Length: 268
Image (cartoon, rainbow, N blue to C red; front, side):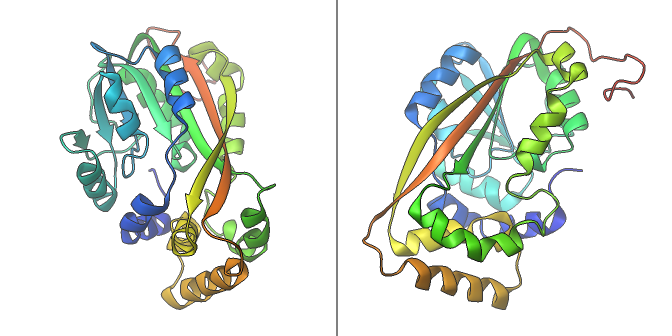
């Protein structure tokens, strides 16, 4: 269950690159999440599949108790270095190592598309207290951006080689937003923010290298691709402003027990 083994190997090998190259999230997003999820002192929050703690470090100052769950040892090690003292547990979205009804909110940034959605949502539902909320976040490339537009033709042939490709999260959200999930979690509220990251040429190449399907490539193939990326943008003025759209979906745990309706994807 959980992340594809090839992608897991890639992320594990490139955890340090992921940490230094991936963007965080707009402060306006964090403020909005704090209000929507009630994140603050006296609250318990699970940051699920926390990676190297890109979102975690922005949640900690809100004053809630933050518990991170991350399956990959290398990513979790980077998380513990980046956010000293954070509670970081080994575990997956499909087998969360927390007790029933133990958290008030669950955040999941840049990761839900790697999960088995039925099993993950069942587990998220289990650990949430009544009235708890879930937030799913993604930094998506803004393809009107000149750097993404220049580089995408190089990446596109490789992007779908992993089962959970970069745009797969939209398909996953489509399965969540059906009748069964709405009965359990309610309708997801969706907001979009514009976001930008200032990068040097080397940092931009690292940003590309941190992508799952690139990190999972054979060494020679990956080096060839990254050299092509470097050549494509090398003549542009640095630092680059690389633009994203931060997509956020928030919903609410409505029912006190896991659904067991006949035919429900939650059965079992």
